[in-house]
Image 1 (cartoon, rainbow, N blue to C red):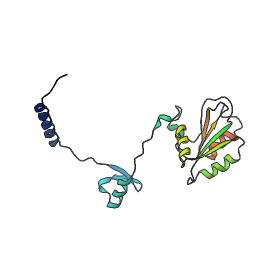
Image 2: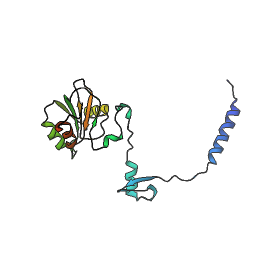
Image 3: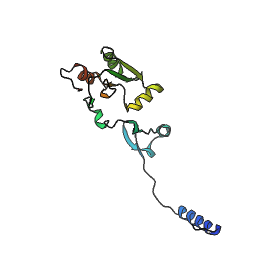
Image 4: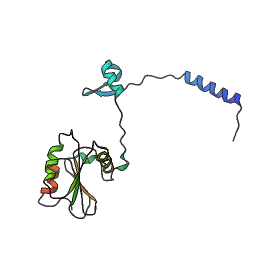
Length: 171
């Protein structure tokens, strides 16, 4: 370990301050979406600029996602995983303001397997949705008798594939 004198430390600080004073560069151009298209933030009017300053950035923590969840989840076909047995219970994730939730809730009220509904606007519902990597409402997660997830559905069309198919799609 080397020791430095106070004079050497002061000299290093002075050199660093001088180097920082001589930093040259250009202003960074920031683009953000506003009213349906991307535009340079510096060209926004005062009201839109104020709105931009109040925006919150969200960071998605994907450490709780099951390994089989990918961007393909957004496809029209419901996701399935390897399983043994048919679905024996479900968990449904909905929101009060969700326009697509009522038809899914109606459909699930007519199925014969038991299930639980979670409001993702509540703390408990949000926490459970986070555990399962739920990214949107409505989402219905189907489980087999071992408690393993066997599929997900986001619409009545997806649910019909699971419950009304002539040949089982799950196992």
